[in-house]
Length: 303
Image 1 (cartoon, rainbow, N blue to C red):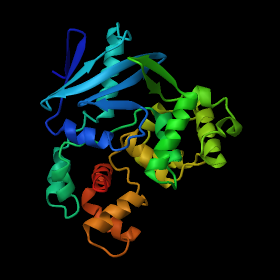
Image 2: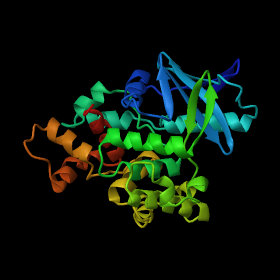
Image 3: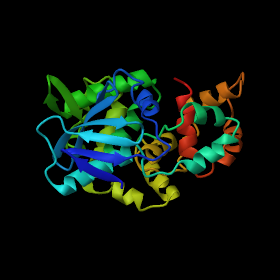
Image 4: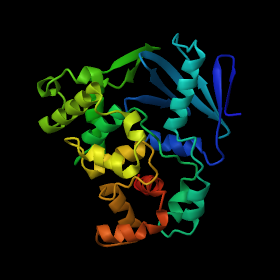
């Protein structure tokens, strides 16, 4: 049984290769995160289903069952709403993916053996909303992670909505419909470059016009989806592969030029210089069809 309901709670059965503490330690790595709150092993966040927003609290029992509660008045009354919430959470934690083949491969891989053991049960945490994933990819370009989180917080609090509960605000990422109507001048108070403001507004307008959508990209093969993303102003190979990995769930997505990936490989191989691209390609041959998971686990080594 994948899910059942008890006293207004939704219970999701978890795959064997899941460890909540490992996933929480990833989710809690940045204190400036504004899209959810973690307290006493429980995540509180808003999940938007169309125009309706639900405040949810997610916790786990013995790494076997995920419990979804609704602490405020925003409870899903319709069955389809509960199904969409479960779908969102399953996508968020990549619960539909069987990681057995990844762990089998990692056992004998010189680079992945240690992180796969140390972070066993870590899933590639998704950003299910395409606009949020693209914005995060653009915001993170050529700056450190802490500053990227600061920019995201400023952007969300300037243009997003929120649900208030128990004296706290739980934020909803700005909609592309709202951002499409803005100009770079409207984003001037956010400490990002004018170019990034232009990129984000341009992406929002493509989504409003219907030229860009998650549904369209999901119907494509990996190479076509990558090409379509790279055609967008402000989206290079790194950002495209980041979104293909974190939102569109292509297992072969591989941001090979990523600084974190390069530094992780350098550390694990005790190198005095950074590995070259052709070296990374050779190292990654055994990772075929698991490049996104390999990358995620190698990132995890750094913090």
